[in-house]
Length: 59
Image 1 (cartoon, rainbow, N blue to C red):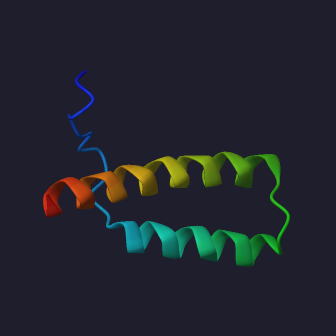
Image 2: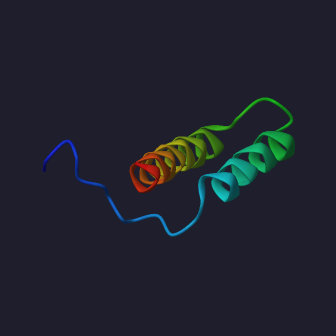
């Protein structure tokens, strides 16, 4: 895979994913269980992909 290629797995915007991350932290009360940690990690990866897609589209 080329470093310039973009994964198209995420259909949500970075803002939508960020909102879900914030909601997860609020529900968890600031301490994540192992299951919540796994969900958080997936959300962060999705958020990063959405940010990269936004940057590439803007270029």
